[in-house]
Length: 357
Image 1 (cartoon, rainbow, N blue to C red):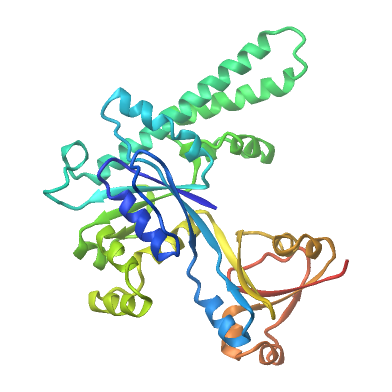
Image 2 (spheres, one colour; image 1 turned 60 degrees about the vertical axis):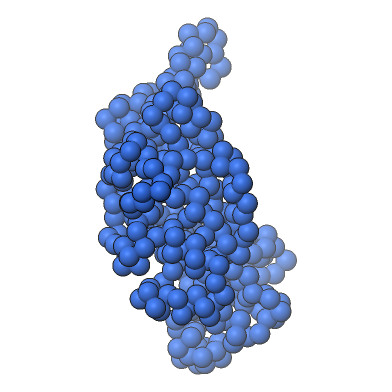
């Protein structure tokens, strides 16, 4: 899954990206500020650590999340808007958007538009996404109308239906309503997802605050979106420290959880993702799937043979397993269940897939 970091110039976005990447095990080179940068970050999960310590597999594997740092947007000029538009495809190919907004004063770094107003910055970014989607929708409507004017169009009925749907999308965008409200039919929803409209993607705000405000945290929402408050400066310092030193530094600042971890967990919530766990002699691993995934589909994430020959999913909630101490004790207390193909996997399920091929 990929998260695109988007923000105005001088928002501290690339500092946030570098801190998250380095703390997550990736080294990044930000030499070219005008180029996108990609990092693969390990998702922190204490449950994997506990399982590895308990069962001693040959290796343990954390889930991964990709972060894409796009160049800062300058929407104050036509040339700046044109440059921003070159990044629409990368944003459409991402699974969610994180808007990094500046909320700190620094006399040595001139703020975007000469003011520090994160609410105005967010408003401007959201409006730009709507304009981009309107442009995309208008182009699609023109193509469909041209196709319908041709005689003998073999896809006349499908094109006519799609045209009506796109006109509804345009009306929703012009009214600043979510595209998700346009379609209720599953096939229409699938069609709209194929266009990867920017304003319909899961999104959150990363509010880059002063050091004191970042350490104190803040509210869970900002405007219409969920929010994470952090100090890019603090996170950059934390990313350079060894784990023990990092823990001590956080304790001195009164920080219970690093903003990097908060950001990753917030991304999971925004994308409606859960993690299930597997453990064996070779590997202990966290697997990421959309919430609502059934057991046989989850098995296919581990190996296609497990889905093809699926028999049962031997399942225990991680907290029940930890409370029991091990799988034998969890069985003895009736916490281990045998679930069928239709079982909906829950976050933290520890699963052993029984299969036969």
